[in-house]
Image 1 (tube, rainbow, N blue to C red):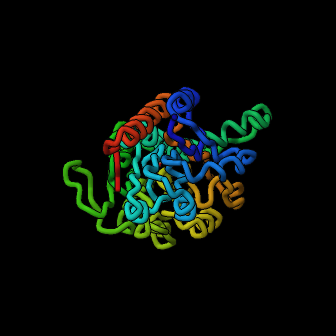
Image 2 (cartoon, rainbow, N blue to C red; image 1 turned 120 degrees about the vertical axis):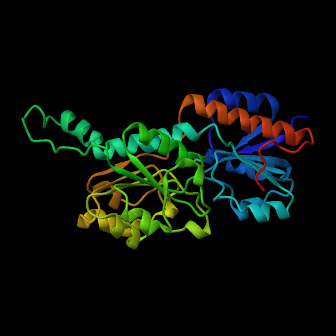
Image 3 (tube, rainbow, N blue to C red; image 1 turned 90 degrees about the horizontal axis):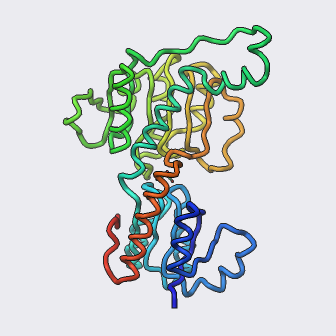
Length: 312
Ligand code: DGY
């Protein structure tokens, strides 16, 4: 008998085909199948979910046979790691393989905001170019200061890319990271005061909730922009929207939001703001690499071994 697993979020077709070969896969994301899922719950031993989706404590409590939560991503903010360990449930992630794509997304958002790329696309499609309307000049990244909030793997990869654009790099990190040669700042506010672009790369948890607040945004100032490739919860969205509306911040590039995918409509009208649907790791290559790690973790678990990328 194949083991039964629950898939909370769609994965790449080729990875789902491999899951179907090895397991009985219950797909929770299809509303029509909820009833069948409810019946299957007692026999579910593994859940595969996304970093932005996770698994709630309520869901964990409804799965008595659960032994592994395999996150298809690196964010663990949507799973209670301590609660899971208390139930002897392994939680795994897909480290390393998505670093470059997420860092690329940070660069893409930064350039999109500084060079008005999304606005330019609309300008051409809407015929404004043909009518000879004026298009605003952008801002060159060269010689500007990138402030990286959270110098983990993604923050570092972003910094290396930004150096190639001629930017200088500063960072704030809870523990000191001296090997980069980049300028360390004691607080997020100090970092912001020394940055033209603030990139939010820090992991979401209780201590980083609203870390980028009105004080940090004020320190950034009216010529600076903010980029968020971490989690919506790290950025105080009320303060951000107000700063964008008041012109006390020049722009924002956001891949992640509180309450996504149903984000605040205020963002749709916020000036000089580029929005992306949490697609930092969304390339075929990376999603295959992530899927392989998920498969390896499941296989180890069902073989009675420790899953290789367990985080709790
Ligand atoms: C992650 O890896 O956590 C990404 O945000 C995808 O969810």
